[in-house]
Image 1 (cartoon, one colour):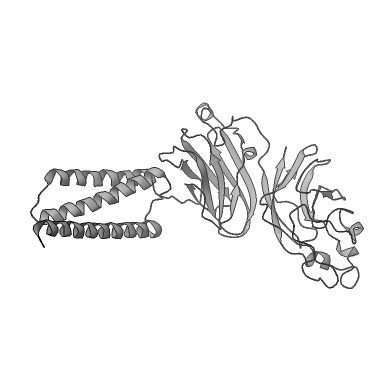
Image 2 (cartoon, rainbow, N blue to C red; image 1 turned 120 degrees about the vertical axis):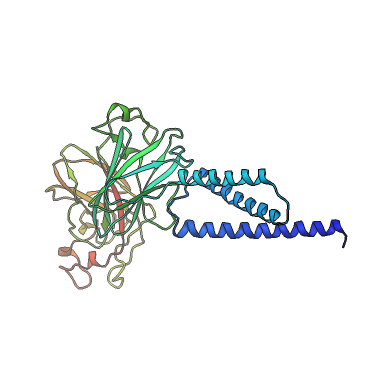
Length: 370
């Protein structure tokens, strides 16, 4: 083997070594970021600076190897060390620690970095126990709130639509739960609740400096409807309690919609010997000819979402998207349309609770008062 071929083989060997070192560094970095790194890499700048930092470490390793062989390159070594220090500092500044708080938490949203950028953002709530929680977020001159029944951790998600506005917001929840915040879409498979444009309304305490900021929706901070409430309705519960924390005033318009179209429930999922099983459906229910005259809302679909306000005796059909004006003030109660126990003939004649107890599933609905 001549000298030229020897040098080429040596360079290939060095390249292989450098690639191996880079692979190890990337693997270690990924492991550290996932397990114990106290920062959250959720911005493009954060990833870019981390990559520069890793490549600079690789370059420093290569320079160290050549120095051992007598090839000294002090300028290149100094520049590489400087790049490592600067990029490492930028990684720490841009990513920022993931703070968690059991009280209010200050969030800086923006998927580019430094609070700049647009796209989906979130606030995560880790609840200590099952219960009804009120989530509240203030962003510039606007705010939003949701009252929901929570049984596990949940991501409250919304969209930052203004690229350049600095995304500072303050989130809180009552009763207390552990809060954290971040950018981009939450992990797949987790429960998330979308804060939509109609949830945002002008803050009563908005001052002049806050009023100059752009709301997350990119719209003006005009006065809007009362904050929406998310409530879970169980198909197997007869005569449920009213929606907690919600009081309707006579004359208000009530709009109820399904939060997630993928959620379904079933009436008669159990005793199919006496009562034919119905298909799984959303809050619109399914057509059912037999015994419909005995339903809470006679003649309407089975498993249809129904409602009443205050001391009303008659149930109103809600359907997939329905608005109605409250005729009196009081709490709002939601239930599925089925045969009440005093008329239920299955399996052995009334009274019998099985018309409700054999149902399966629940659906989360959004209630807006206007």
